[in-house]
Image (cartoon, rainbow, N blue to C red; front, side):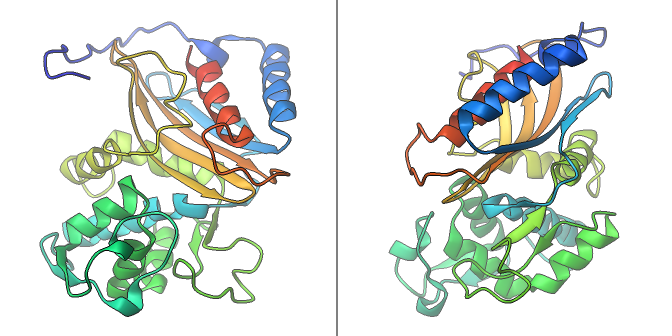
Length: 286
């Protein structure tokens, strides 16, 4: 959105749209078609934040988070700052030992570089920086993130290990982490409501999510001027995207979309899982 574009106006009496407005039979038929074309397994939960209406499909099935688990990490850090246990401007030093591959830029930078906790969390989120994720987890501890999720009433959402760390018996099935679409929807809902810490803390997290650079799933097929704030995740057989979407008229929707068990490895924008999530977002919202 350009600086000259007017801010969206709220529409408190908005008419339901997309899959929120169709019959159960139409809903099932559209989801079945998207899932069939993906050749994977769709799990999702979506909420119209004006009406509270929720649409879900296998939303209680545990799924591999891939990098979507970085959202719970970010939420825990933000809440720790809100509570006075951490400072956003606390310096973190990049070390050679912490560098890992995959997504991100920190692994290519010079060891000894010092960044603020906020900057590392931003990189962890908007370019899914794996090295940054490990720097954050080294500072806060994996157990603290999981304890926070339990305190928030999310019994499934779990971080198992650092990025590129060897799998343990606990992480072997899910890798980096596990969650459900239902739990991610609850977390997004709390952020949208300003209930993560306080309104300012929630808005801060959403502002970081709004800078997301990977936009091949939820926002891909949406019209111009729809706003998206979210976190993606991908491993070979998985494509995920969770976020809050705002229509030009101010209506907001929370989407937690997962495509799992993809039969082919394809690291391009045309990955069938990414296409499926983009189609699903469009079907839900338009």
